[in-house]
Image 1 (cartoon, rainbow, N blue to C red):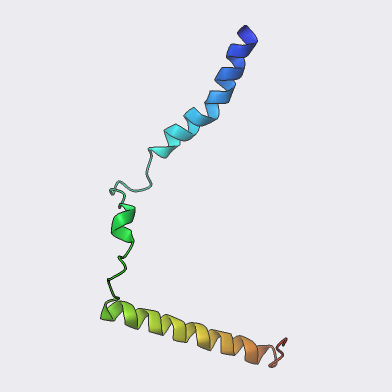
Image 2: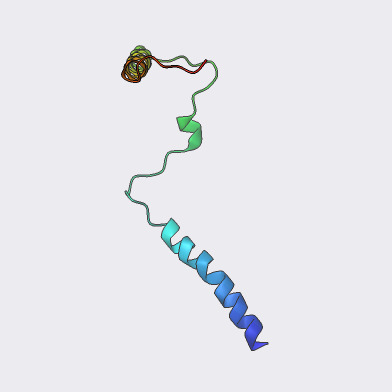
Length: 77
């Protein structure tokens, strides 16, 4: 009987420890709901968001091209 109680307590310790850490947020700002982060199907990107995406894609393309040039143009086809 005593051994069973010890097993139960030992089994609950990690959950209690993780539960205690879970309520300590790195910042005291409220957590945003996922519904506010997910864009609806009918909503389009704003002009600033479009420009940011285009510039990011262009930078990635340039970086890929530089890597190809550094490798001597060797590609596996």
